[in-house]
Image 1 (cartoon, helix red, strand yellow):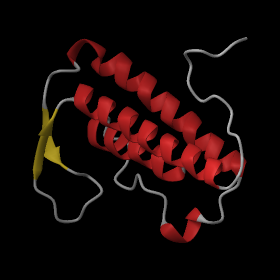
Image 2: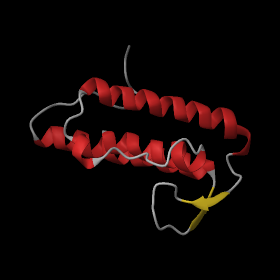
Image 3: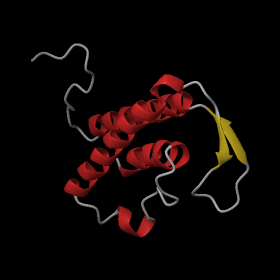
Image 4: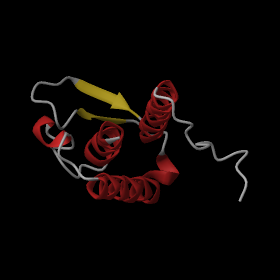
Length: 120
């Protein structure tokens, strides 16, 4: 889950919004995070997505050219905020599918994780 959040923080928060040069959770901290800390990381992600929409919503297809802020040696990357938003979303759904498959292999029946088809 932290890896999913880190992808949003890296590409949207660091590359597009220039909020940080250290968007990734250090390896030594990964296994010691509480559920509350992970939820807080996703709250941070929600704020970054909202800020991206506020600042770039009218220009999601305008390319940004810069080096990747969290890499020491990096080539120039040219990509639009819209493509990075889609990348982070599809990345999350990819891993959501992996998590659901692992839960099923472990004998659990995960809840419906899709918005469509859920009953209130």
